[in-house]
Amino acid sequence: MGEGVVSRRPIPVILITGFLGAGKTTFLNHLLGLPEISSQKLALIINEFGAIGFDSALVAKGSHATYELNKGSLFCICIKTDFIKTLDAITAASDIELVIIEATGVAETRDIEGFFSAHQTAGLFEIHANLCLVDALNFITVVPYLKAVRSQVAWADGIVLNKTSLILAQETDKLVSVLRSINPAAPILRTDFGSIPFDFLAGLKHVRRDGPLLDAPPEAVVSVSIERDAVLDREAFIRLTEQIKGNILRLKGHTDFGSGPVFVEIVGGRLLEKAVSYQITTRTAFTVIAWKMRREELTRLFSQVFKEPFT
Image (cartoon, rainbow, N blue to C red; front, side):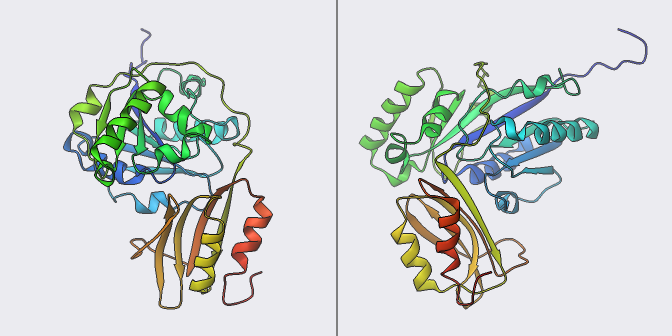
């Protein structure tokens, strides 16, 4: 080795995939709480499909560096330039020991190892494991018609079957059989709230499966981000979400129904509300991810639920 050249072990990368609402952010927070991970110098890459990033606001605070990629799917060529710039920034930090990536829930998984072969970062990163979170309650409903749900499982090195307390034991066994038919090799861990022991993660080994990156986001899936310092009509909002619940894959953000902002999300067709846990700058800001709808129509419908004219 030439004088002045310092060898460096590749930085391990943990990739978190899983469909919308599977619990990836909760799972990420669990990982950040494990001593074996929290003791390391971390970099987080949060990939969201919508223009407004909420997951990074929901991640537990810490000394880790956080990078947001909100222009599309991590596995789409459309985001390659931004991803490589992020890797360059992480490399420049020089003291990063572990990278954790949370991919958008609509990602149709491909192998991203080609990104790590860019001349600036070649040999500096290696994927330790692709972990796929599966929503035990909703997986069977969405897997028949959304290709991304199946591909996320098929490309996983380890599968975390989440929310198992919400279904019966025999339903869990049936679901495991379905997952095995899609990916017979990946170990499956049943859990709730994304809680896994570190030994499960440490025991995984990444299997490279070369496949071309997508050249565009999934055609049938669109996202609309609404941000406005205004109040929504609660009854109109609920009527609309019920009317198009078959098209809504995910809704996440906060809104003010007249009594102050609350966090709202739609998972598996169910509307949930809770207190806002992050700092806000506008009374209403949320992203809707839907399928088989035009973006313009989705925007028009949600513009009608404000109590004031929407411009």
